Image (cartoon, rainbow, N blue to C red):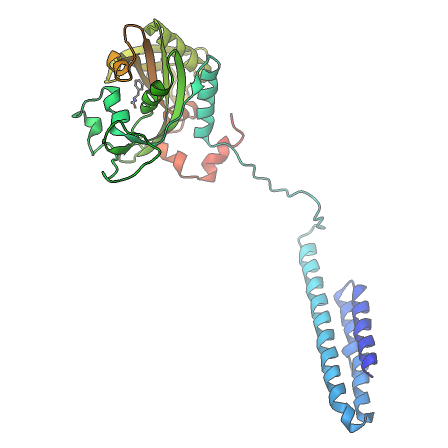
Length: 349
Ligand code: PHE
């Protein structure tokens, strides 16, 4: 008798293999569980069994019924799923590639940084890096920035507590650690490990205690440049920056140097540019970067003789370049990770 029950389960399983519709399923179910179904008929046989065999048969019957109901339940779920997919109006071929392909892309700041670096690489500059945590000596003293300079004020610079430990950031003495306010500290780190002639470009992240608005961020990016050699002049500075800015903003660009002041360069300049391809900013002078001839005092502080060595340095904001290049009017767009903003740059440029 129990063999019969197993055969009925196997038969139910086999019949479910060939069903294609809800009607097929109903019919298959009736042939096993309906009033004249195989299992219902088999159950009737219990009446003819000797009394002591009845409990075991009853148990086997319940088991078979449970298994059969499970099989029919699964088959029905599979049918419903297929019907859902078909109601989408298309046959689903799971081997086809997805139609939705959102490709990843480069962040506009990464893209601009790479462009700047590749332009300077062509004329022999190499990339230098240093840590974002710095010390007061590298960020200020070695750059000829006096103790009472406003940039050193706790209002402008983020200082670490005196007992903080930074085993990977060497100090001159016992000076405080800070988050670097500019990439100019990389000038000093580089001059201390490499003798001139030296040509470096140093992109990196900087930090200032600025209140965030459309043009300020407490956390932003700069690229430093430094060239130290014998007999470097302002002509070299102007020539290199003209080449760089034309590569970046187009050949029709005009540039001018305007006198300025930085403690670590003498003379110091702001570079302005004017050109036809600058969107809303076209055809008027706009400020782009600071630069100047390395102050002799800076060379002395890294043990170079200013009578033998001269150089120029410059620093520019990567956000500023990206904003001018792409006509972006609010610096905060760069940090909000809004796909609608980022997707505009995802092909790279
Ligand atoms: N470090 C200056 C700044 O952050 C820029 C600069 C760099 C100026 C190198 C001159 C030379 O504003």
